[in-house]
Image 1 (cartoon, rainbow, N blue to C red):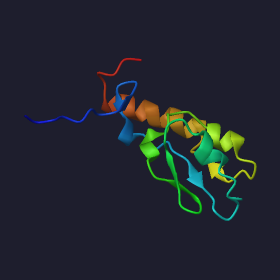
Image 2: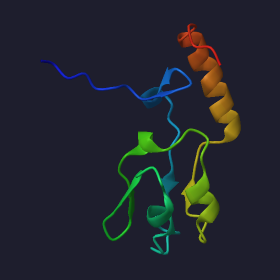
Image 3: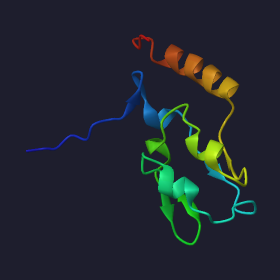
Image 4: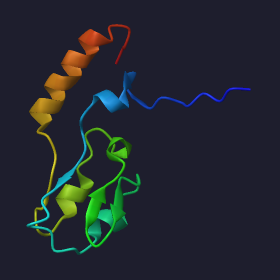
Length: 98
């Protein structure tokens, strides 16, 4: 019997086609662990510093870790970029209805 892996989607678009995930500037990071301790989506690992180990676990549009980072060490693409990317991907996946 074959086992099929479910493909994660965001509003019908394959999640791994939306490059929305955090980037950590380690030069700014104070190693406080707020990002790793508070991300409910298991996006991070900790190995003496935060590692974005599972970027596509991050919820599209979520910026909770960046908003809570006391050092402003976490960034995301802009919301304008996200809007434009979703428009582009909707054209690629015309069957997707929002």
